[in-house]
Length: 227
Image (tube, rainbow, N blue to C red; front, side):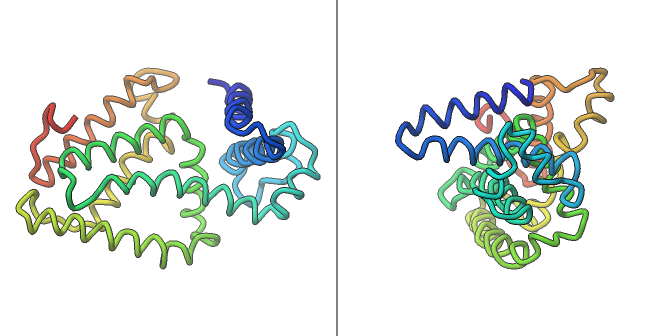
């Protein structure tokens, strides 16, 4: 789907969901966030301008400043949106969950995000490469606390004899690296599989491969029950 079609569909979806007086505001904010994600992914934080973002969104530059104030505020809003999407998927990991099913579903969801929103992953990757200047506090506090909570879930699975012991921090790091690779290095993977662009089937095969490696590494059964 083209970037133009994506923005048009995004605007239509917002309008369908909200028909009250605030629908224009919601639509404009959504279009600006979408455009900002694209420009920040392509130009980086320093190279991006609110003028370029406004042009990509098809809105006056004044609208960008009206809704978000500054470029930094907009950049943080983009990052917040990306992190909310990704971290929300961790809700599926609970002590009552079946480890194989929960981890498989989590991995597949992360690969879907890499396929559907590759630019989001590239924005975040650039932020990390440049020293997490805008997300340092989040990493040290919010993310660390969340990983600790989910680590206790994995530890409970181990204690219940549901899976083999494994370092939770490194497990999450491996899953994040593997799943986001297909967004950040999509061009490289596409070249290796002999295509100009990865197909939906390529992403499905990637997810299946990651699931198999992770589950077997955790001593979990991989099969239809985990699919």
